[in-house]
Image 1 (cartoon, rainbow, N blue to C red):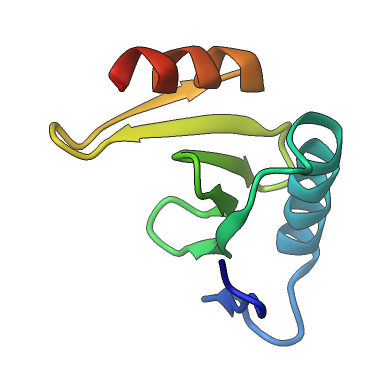
Image 2 (image 1 turned 45 degrees about the horizontal axis):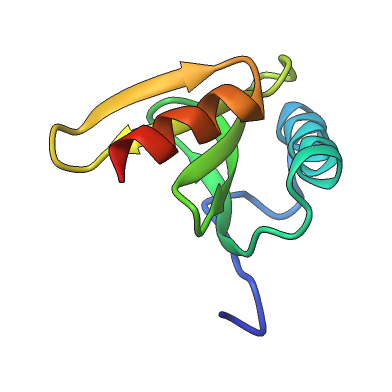
Amino acid sequence: MKSKLEIHNLLNPVGYHEAQCLSKCFEAYADECANEPISEIGFNSKTKYVYIELENGISICSKLGSDVEYLVTNFETLKETFFESYGQAEDLIDSMY
């Protein structure tokens, strides 16, 4: 586990929408999975999502201040599946392993 987290691809200062997204992602993290280790925090410039990537394979994402979504990527097929709840994302992770 990393002792220090870096934020990737966010400009300094952070833009308004990105700050709102990051806030929503951290709120969801605190409410749903605060004990899960974080792998990475960042901004995907292609999709415009701010994300918190967890070590369990779930990413908490928000785009342009929208509500969070939970993303699971199947790295064998590269298929990305978005969910409205953390529990749904956990169910998919459990079924993959």
